[in-house]
Length: 483
Length: 94
Image 1 (cartoon, each protein chain N blue to C red):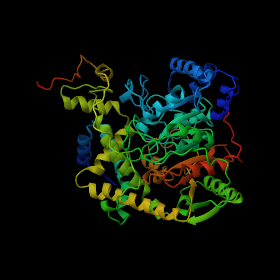
Image 2: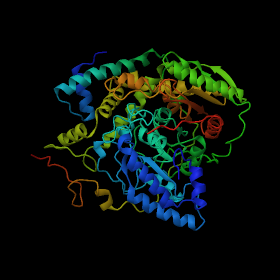
Image 3: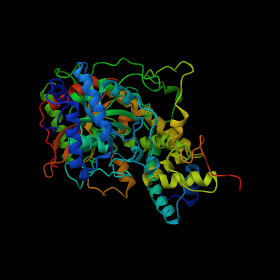
Image 4: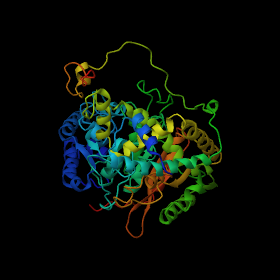
């Protein structure tokens, strides 16, 4: 079976029609991983034995005629989502040997569907980065050009899907970590509204911003994945008490009359001209299909990077204080408790994680709290207000997903400021708790690198952004990378 | 923006992190650049008002306080080093 860019729904048909069995499908993906991932490095751990066992169980469900959307579908899961009994490293030396004693709620939900776990996808350490080059174990490469980054932090998930080493994957998004790698790797990824998906079992980076979501070959598959993982959860007090709709319901419906806002600040000189032109061409194409383009402004974008980094790092400094080398995680050396903790953290965490902990403690410390952290909270309120204002005259917002296509490995390694400012197109969506989807809108003329556009929706209106992304994709021919 | 050595040392104390001499110099430079970027927020002229922080998202209610089975002790201790039914830490009395 040709697995290149295989969709979940096509695999579903093939499994239900007995064209292929779940163990055979699983074995095909494992073979591809074995052959291709040595150069791509999208997985930290390939769970071969578990995958084959999961597939055997799935086949029994299929044979009994009781399959659901994801029964027997092999998936990759980002390495910061806990899977009972399966090493979950967060791409950090700190958790190199950590084996969770429980499943994240999303994993329980996927188990209920009878999914197959192919392995644990690489990521930036503790999801802090936009290149997957801060991973302690697998510095993933971009399938379109091995000299370039796949984006991050869910770079392993996006690269695995792009290279057809999994038909879909789970990622997490704190400031763009699903959407930006989806853009760099030419796949489709959605960050749901904050609260739509339970965070229970997701290793926390910034608790008010983190959200789990899928990375797939297209918006239709994203809708299928969302149907499986969404819903309120008693284990997560920040999961929302809202009805979970059928996310596939509006797919294929015409987009006539839907109003698409284009905030001018997202198309400034900070964005590469090839990216800008590609996204604006896509907007014009959507207009031809009946959408209405609306010009608008978001002046708060100017301060979005400091606001995001101050909030995210303050929360990270607090969340990561639990890593002390005692209960679990890397244990350093020391004659006293204090020495042990400091040595464990200093040698267990990588440089980028340490920088963010330092920044977070700076923002929260006495004398700086009002000037930085509270100011960032004020800006968060203002960004929410500005989004609400735009949504008074628009149904969705269209922006580039990233200011540039995938850049070369090493290009931003020694420049944290450059790395942080590259998140400008995505962070406000997390700050305002909105849903956003990135889909490919074209490729660079010279190197054939994917360019992504983001469609941002109102809170809990994932259906409309999926509808528009699907409408766009129905007239777009994606190019598979040559491995 | 330049960051003073004593500021970085204070942050290392709060963060429970050690750096050697070269590492400290390097991180001082990086933090100077990062804090310079964060300083841009000072140009934003609004004050945080926590009374306006009403969240329209209806989050889950707190669970009922009902006793339930917890994780087995041996499973929780499986990730710790030197366990003998307990977490073992260095002696703190010298």
